[in-house]
Amino acid sequence: MSLAMEYDHWKSVVRGLSKPKVPIEPYVPVDRRSPSRHLPVPSAWEGIPSILADIFQRFRLKTRLCLEFGVEYGYSTVALSSFFDHVIGVDTFEGDKHTVNKSNIFELTQERLSVYPNISLVRSDYRDYIRNEVRNFDLIHVDIVHTFADTYACGLWSAQHSHCTLFHDTQSFPQVKQAVREIARATGKRFYNYQESHGLGVLL
Ligand SMILES: C[S@@+](CC[C@H](N)C(=O)[O-])C[C@H]1O[C@@H](n2cnc3c(N)ncnc32)[C@H](O)[C@@H]1O
Image (cartoon, rainbow, N blue to C red; front, side, top):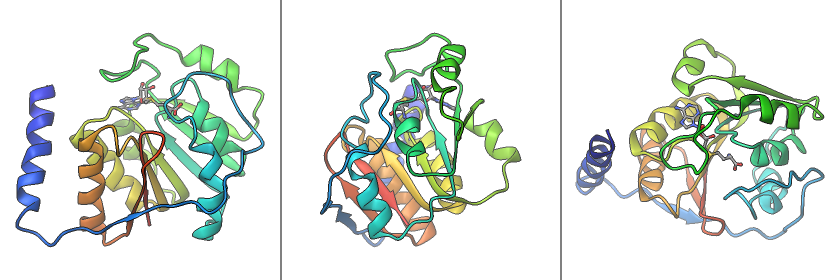
């Protein structure tokens, strides 16, 4: 399975050599501000919450409806919920080959986030979820298993169903950055990259 994913990644890199280069614009925040909500649980997303307001302001994003793929303990979900009327978090809650957690944490996470009325959690694989979801979102955050194939599949659907799509781990996982590059190419959207906190791709 992982060899196949690696193959998808390198196939994309090699094919990209004969195509026009996708420009990646560095994202440099001018303002850093902590959001109103913070969940004290472990997360590689640490540092990202302080640039969310900057992103929303710079790109004049609406803050009505947000979708997140990859909730885990809820750190990023809670940070996003400081800004949006409603945040839907989708996760198998079983972890993946890149996460430390491999056990089912749905009940624990749902209980922990139950104090935030604007967060709804859905226990689902992203592939099943996107089969039935037809809405458009102001923002979608993609932070699932960090393979090229899954980031591309989930991310392409997300880019087609949101004004702005965020991708975590563009710096720590080259296959995530390559998937975002390919999605930018396929959709004609612009790719900004924030280098800190393991990297955050901003596509719009
Ligand atoms: C890196 S963690 C998310 C961290 C979270 N965004 C944060 O910053 O606190 C990745 C999560 O993606 C979930 N995941 C992996 N593959 C998935 C899939 N195919 N569908 C839904 N969720 C998936 C895992 O269960 C895991 O909880």
